[in-house]
Length: 273
Image (tube, rainbow, N blue to C red):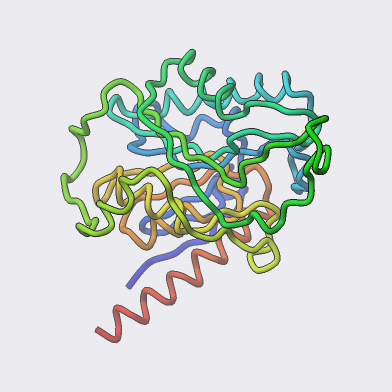
């Protein structure tokens, strides 16, 4: 039987929820000391994009310089948590044009390398959302057209060495998935804000692919901006230890409920086998 336990801050300060595989901490990744240095095999996350998304507990509209300073702070904290052979899958925009054109992917990758991360590759995630485009700049004119790529990226970084030496050495990826996912263009739909109840959820498919491709069964996976809990759900489904850090208590509750619902489904499947 899968064990679960709901915790309050009175019980254990930052720990919001824990089960056999999943832990959710209601805290700030920049302030918490709960994640031990050198303990994480993989980080999968999608940080705030600074696009004025209406989060409950985060100001998503700051100057671009302040946004990059914030990015450097949390990237530095994440670097410390990784094992020497730890990997990092960072889902961010390729660029942005809201409030002025900025090369987000290039700028954040440069900051990550400055901190010490080593660059491996970039995956292009095609969400298939080109139909939502509404801005073309100077329509049918060379005056000032906007060139907008309707994609996001997953930047693959690592700490010190790419070859993985730690862990169970048990991979659970199929031959077909390995062939498909090592092609650096991924095509699958984004997630519905309304269905999930979060202003910027990413689909479970994104962390699921990253986890199965870059970790062994039983590895420890961290999401420092856990949000609606997609990374944690992928950990539950794949038998990895998932650790989520989320500053907003409401989103912690959302993640917990999604985990509990998925746990019930897994238990029913186990009971029927």
